[in-house]
Image 1 (cartoon, chains in turn red, orange):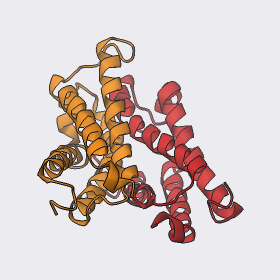
Image 2 (spheres, one colour; image 1 turned 120 degrees about the vertical axis):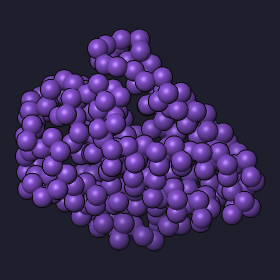
Image 3 (cartoon, each protein chain N blue to C red; image 1 turned 180 degrees about the vertical axis):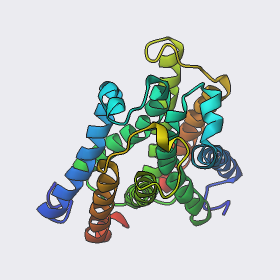
Amino acid sequence: MIENFNGIFYLILYIISIGLAGYYSFTFLFNKEKEFAKYNIDTSAAPAANFGIFWVTAFFLVGLYILFTGPEGTWPFFVINIIVFAMATIYQFCFHFNIAFLYGRDKVNSTIEQPIVSVVVLVINLIIVYGLSDKIYL
Amino acid sequence: MIEAWGGTLNLILYLISMLGLGYYAFLTVLSPNTLVTRYDLGEKSVPIIRIVGTFVLPILILGIYLLFRGPEGAWIFLVLNFLISTHQVILGWATRLKVIDPDSRQDVGDEIVGHVFVIIAIVLIYRLSDIIYS
């Protein structure tokens, strides 16, 4: 497994990335009340959250598969992750600091956690793609 | 382009899939209020819908890239689409059977689209297996 990921460093980064997807997947699937309370969101948003979290769950499941089979030829997975978190970073920063996407902003809380997580995962994925470029583009 | 996709039928199925994805990308990113009204969600749902959009739009972007490049070696993209559509169908049935969110509103059109996406994904993975796994 370590050899598949070009060493322990990239393997750990990959596990962190997949672990975060798993954490948010589990939290929003089974403990969404707590997350909703954190952002002052009521239960009317539950269907939207459920729809959204299935995308994250799909990423988590495919990521788990790659963890055990190796990343050869899986560039679309990593490229999609980079675009997702690049967009999420822009959105979360604009939303948190009241720059844009302000519809409904006054009705919900925003924490610095989301922009920071987006940036961290974006950087992790950029490092992974750089480090594994000899394998994922095969 | 047709040759890269192993025939016209595969290309048409893929185009249908991408058009559907484009429609949902438009709704989630540019028109979340449409979804709020359709599913009777609160205004507080808009930020969550936009976050969903940050997942939908990148898959559409990569899908358009693959449309012109061809699907060679891109099995993980099609499998990811299959899993997402399958989850959407499971969510639709679980809601309809009142297993989760029994009070939420259903939209038959979106549920049909979900089933169509699953069938298209299965057909494409099967028909393109010699290309996408190469």
